Image 1 (spheres, rainbow, N blue to C red):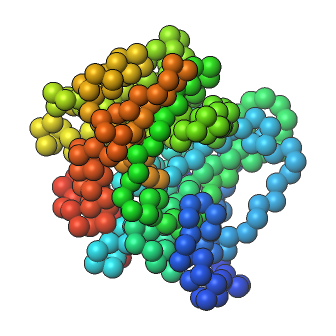
Image 2: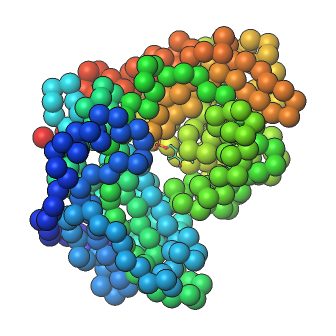
Length: 365
Ligand SMILES: *Cc1c(COP(=O)(O)O)cnc(C)c1O
């Protein structure tokens, strides 16, 4: 059970917020992940004391003892979600309670303290409200939120930390793809695995990403955009990309996504698309799909679309698969019809132009 329900946040004034001319310049073309807002939230946890020191204050560098556990044993988890400016000018979050629940699932796997879900959502809400001037002015822009937690105890012994620090920062993000979504090319990694049975594949932890950087760099070096990982036991079944889940669309109307076996990250975008597809009566299956079958179905034309999904890029068409045996185009190699339809529907719900039938939108004001 998470401790300390009903934590109250202390608000520290910002001594020198970014001046508006500088901010507007940064917001005109923010890209992804390199521009940051003025504030952050921090909350501390300590064994015997629980959660305390909840603060919304200026975004400042952290000062850490060189023996801080996270720096040595990577006891760290994170989340990623976006605040969207709605068609009516208000600001909304998309399924923040799902991120809160997943954050705690990751915390349990990494032997970290759980944060009450309402505190997670409140922390994100407070930061967005404090930084409401940090929404990009470009169309399709959003405020990307990065809640994360580190083992903050200064101790070199190998055991779960007795202190944690939870932090939320915000980064204005441009439209991931300027005009629509270009199809990406995928490299199948045969030498590396992302996650093994019993490992941390279903947790959103920094360590998974560290291990994915070499195979991702290999994909780029070979002229592709993303790496796709196969299961670690048989090297046969398609799992996911380094940070996105996959869907396959067939000519008989079937839609398939790999099942959550414990080695795949349970994406909130994946879950939302499954819900939308089922509600439309589409023939969706959470089923294993092999890489040989993928190549064969792409070559025969049985497979008509493949797309990747995740918070950062929403829905991204996959136009090409490549491995040591060569490349195969999927469909025409461009974005497929269903891919575009899913993308428009989900973006529409997030932006408030398509009805939210599932209570996924939390309006902030
Ligand atoms: C975050 C993440 C996803 C996508 O999850 P969303 O909740 O849809 O953003 C998929 N795979 C991995 C490995 C991830 O870290």
